[in-house]
Length: 119
Image 1 (cartoon, rainbow, N blue to C red):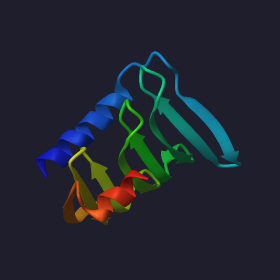
Image 2: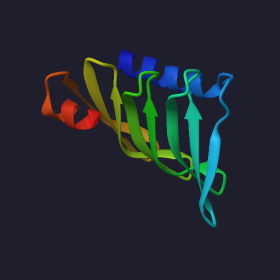
Image 3: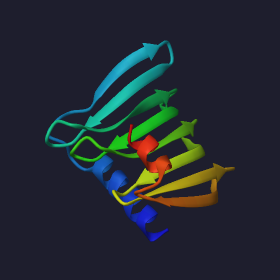
Image 4: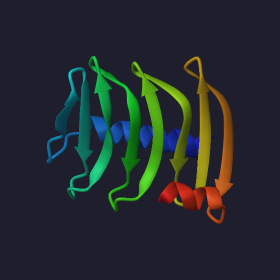
């Protein structure tokens, strides 16, 4: 659980910190926008969608090497369903229900679940 909180704090801090490379926003349809945020080295840091000004749909985060570190879905700005957080050695699956964590599962780096997440 401690690793999950550290990863989450790192992702939020990264998003809020000043970037040398400005985020890009691409209109997908009349009410949906795709946002892409970058690391200082130019690689993608986070990518996902906004609807009516709120996080909505699938969001993926990457480390500065381009490796996926988290993936999950927002609905009207609220985390929903299953989220995955990878720290290089373990993959944590966190399920959300009514905007609260309902369960947590963890796999080690040798698991096929981890290998599938990295794709």
